[in-house]
Length: 364
Image (cartoon, rainbow, N blue to C red; front, side, top):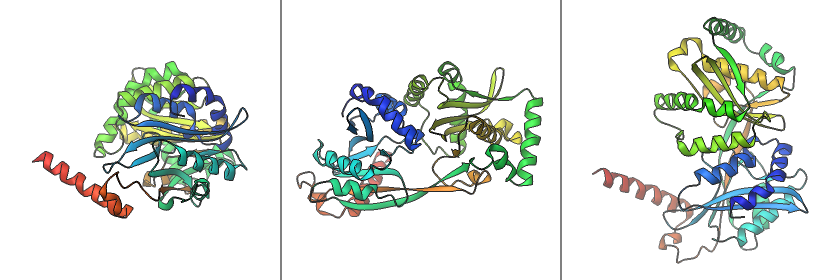
């Protein structure tokens, strides 16, 4: 599929699959909003959808970009979604992965590099997709693994989890909560689009302030991202699957977390807080109370997003490991670039060197 309108027709089945697979970041409401508002300039939509009759049994929403050497690189919907992955109906992974491999081999433009992101560590999916690609099969290159810290709520719910935290953790939470309440602040979870959109300017301010204090790392909370959030909020409004948790009082928001959910799995997507109130740990309070809210609506997993930042391990020692893999097409067309005679890693290194030289020249 190469257009959003056609994909919209398949969105109900795609969404049902995301719920079944418990993959909140892979829901069509997010991906289609990203396609519509944040697709990089010059990129093409190439989404693979596998169906059995009227049932959607597999999805792999790619977009295509050109590298400096003219190679066609198929990437999943990134970077702002952090965790979009191919979806497979349970028990049908082999057939669906083979269908995805065949579709990629026949795609135009021909994929030179295919990135398979955010799959569970050790997943057989990259090998199965490779096997479905007609000979010569592409090369499979494992990239790097990364943790996703997770709060598990299936043993005793919130109280069970909270009771397993340290005495200092529980004491600090209760002390800061009392002080915030005394100052007129409360924890609010907004699930209606109108309430979420109303708070986006505050959320943007908090996120960008926090991002600046960390040296500017992470994506911009720009107008394109705002448009993605607004559309997704409207698509999922009232379902409880798209939530904005805040610590606020009338006229003032001092912490906010954007949360997505599917099939009992909740994922914290973006967050920010006002450092002027850091002595009362509003971000910490917001996360704990959001975990409590997730447990109350029946979610059993609350993940804190990709990456092993130390603050996440205040809340849990449990984590799931994920990895990224690349499929690299054999027999790359020689007219793309003479650089293709080099090994893939050498081309990547050359690309980085050229990029540094270009930036240095521009500065001079």
